[in-house]
Length: 150
Image (cartoon, rainbow, N blue to C red):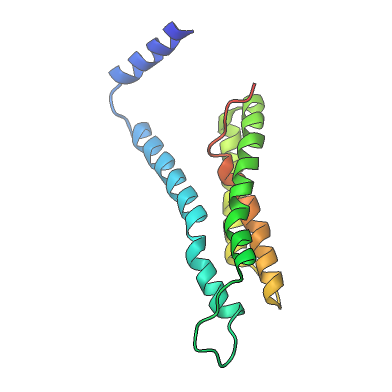
């Protein structure tokens, strides 16, 4: 097994740079960028949510999310990421990583759009839909980093 890995690595070292190499670098780089962006941009969004939905009229200070709501909005994607890593790791070992990567990408696109279009008439319903889509977004992000489960 180790000899096969060395042969594969030697073949990669000897190969000429082709368009496929650039494509692979861009796809992998964009995957890491979007994952980090989706997970860490929410801290800025929570400040906006506080100012829009939790502003008290007549107050001199801008509104802010209550701590338990802020923690929920920030943490739900990380819970989804852990769940997604375990599920997509298991699924990737059975179906193949390429198929699973396509599924995670589709899930991430749909849930990113859903997060941006979170809806509701009350602040609680907006936060609930945002948390719902952020959990599933995190689930898809977890599929980008699956462990080998055997």
